[in-house]
Length: 300
Image (tube, rainbow, N blue to C red; front, side, top):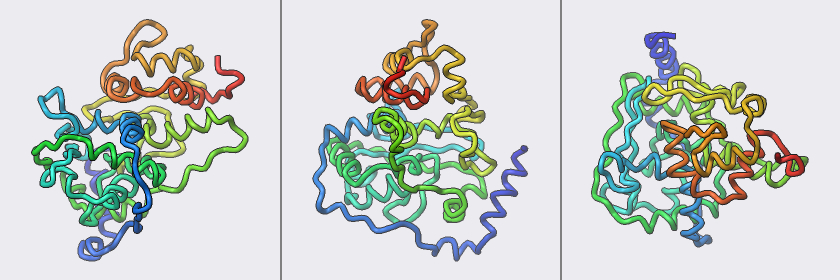
């Protein structure tokens, strides 16, 4: 559907209440992490799993790690990742653990404003309090870089940030991801990684006209990714039909090399380089077991 129809649809949501009412609408839940101490090493592992380095580091453009500045050009405009270093002015150095928790798990800034869902906080909502404490400990070790975060460059009505509160009310599902008792520990671990921190569905699930994922087509692939990219279908039936097994899929997520001897390119190559290549063998196998819908006794 053409852009004017997309704009009209989003404008209809924005019109659900006046701009003043939307701006005044409080969102979010209280957070308390006072009783927890974080493990920086575990937090660094979770940050790799979550793609933080890939999305918040413009190293190809000469930027420092986690200093932000990476551009994502989409049909809604250009999103730019913010500075996540410990700089007090331009990064998150002046934040509290509670601010960090609300940003990561709830998608809410320290000022109480909603973040755009280009930031995959719906997936990060699966993090436990301990996960957040560990991530916070890891981010506190990042050297400060005084690089200002650049503004998002979105066209109206998408630039009207308070309208995201209506979007959240319509589309946001941040409920808990409870283990499936009839499936193996490895399958459940893979499900948590894929549907949580690794946010595979952010790129491999199509979206509706307002940018919300179409849950009924989870992992069916998507067009219109940033910079005009596409993602393939990675459902179990498709993966098996294409010759993927638990072993070769886990190996590909480690190395970037496919069973045919080709290599992942584009954004998936970056996912491997900056993320999955650092995961444990057990976690890579768990991802493969879940995606292929296997159990531990038939992992071939």
